[in-house]
Amino acid sequence: MSSSVWTEFLVASRFLGLLFHHNRYLTHLHLPAIIFDGDEEDARHCLDGLAGLHYLQHLTLHNAALAQRTIFALLRACLALPRLKELFLDFTADWEDDVHQHMPELETTIADALRARSSALSSAIKITALQLPESESDMNPLVFPLLESGLLDLESCTIPQFGSDNHPDLIERTVRERCPRLRHLRCLSLWRASLDVQDTCAFIRGCSHLKTFRGNDEINHCGGTGDILRQIASTLVQCHSSTLEEIKVLQCTRFSSKDQRSILSQCKQLKRFWIVPHEYGGCGVSFKDLVEAAWMCAELEELGLTMTRYIEFEEESGELIGGLAGFARRPCVIKQKQAIAVGMVKRLYARIGQLRNLRVLSLGADKSWGDVTGFEWDLTLPNGGLDELAGLKDLADFEMRTNLWSGMGQAEVEFMDEQWPRLRKITFGTWSTTFKELMMEPHWLWLQAQRPQLQFGWTNPANE
Image (cartoon, rainbow, N blue to C red):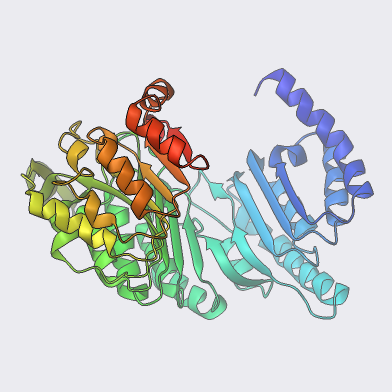
């Protein structure tokens, strides 16, 4: 951190306690957590001020690596806030080796918080949304004490990082018994989850009637999270296929075509299916998988698909994996270009066109093999699949993340104007200079004139 930025934090820290004192009716607060880790006296004033915000309902602390003593002090200040319902500790914890010796301090903090919440209001409010800090070390002493504390009635939670001494069965049982109303899960780091995949899947299994799962893949290269997403997808389908309404994975580098087919063909309550690829791709679903299995999710309202003309299969590589129990050949994923018949293109878009409730549609081609040729004719007339989307009368937001617009002309924009009466926005996955050139092409100029309220935008194709 530069000295100028650090100075700004120090100044903010010195006046924050005063700010809290004069704004005691604050309900929502987002702060950089480092403010509480500066000068000891300034930090104490900030913590005292925070503890006095009795009307605070939402607290987010972010962007820092905090020492153990600071985290315990923060918990003492915020857990006792009587109206606090959403607590997001989005920072990294620097736990010390002797942290377990400080558990009595945490237990006292929890007991004091329970008494404070009960005495402040006639009916105690509990925390319904929670995110705990991550750690670079293989421990997280907060999870079980808080889950078992009585302070929580979770509806939404970021899957926490567990220590190496926790058993998946214990995690599953604790979530099932202590979080009966937990419906919404986030996994902010699929890479982190891949280090303890069994714990992550146990947490998912422990939920009852799960409605949403959101994940984020923070790896900046291809591969790395395919196995965790495969196991997560399998767990979601096996345990929650009858209740899931949303699956959304951002910056995805590896999500197999068959796993996506499994979700679409078995999760009948699904309303939002959104897989956003990383810059390098790697999460394409094949035409074959999209067409062969019937989709059960007829009520989809938002759909984000990344398609591929490759099919994938596994064969043994030369690399040995294993340990004391024996060795095996690592399966190697091989992709092979598939010739896509016009009939299969039409069948896919006909399937999308049957989603009568669809409001948001985002389509793109998988760029992991650097070949997106062929897609430029998918949404054309009469031989492409555009006419199969005539039933999307509620479509409001249409995004083409790769060159699906390249083959379009006057006939295609007239189709959009006639068949999509509620269309409000079209987004192109291209650079700003190319977007400006596109907007000067005659057919897009015509559509702009026909629909003056229609918004046109672009999104950086390197940051899908």
